[in-house]
Length: 116
Image (cartoon, rainbow, N blue to C red):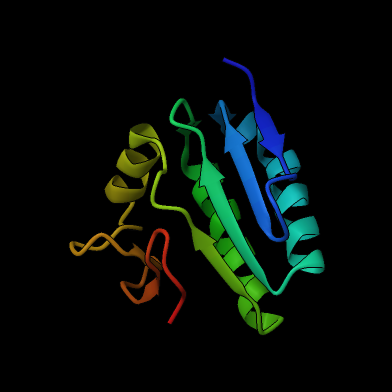
């Protein structure tokens, strides 16, 4: 499975697929940083074939912190691959209600929704 990033879905929308793992963490970080520089609201969409590890979650946390510092919004589309959702759930990044949470349990933005 290859790694893919598409940044042409509209302003602030970025789509990723394939291996969202440590081997591709630098490219993922760079793509999200670029998107956050160019838009006030960034939405990450993931292909159904996406597979992630904990390094991907670390990059997501860093992107969220960058967005908050810049008074911007970072959301994850609800269509995230089941494999990615499983990693997020196991690591405590998805609340019982289905929202994307920071590791401290605070709601960081629902998949497909706006950050609070």
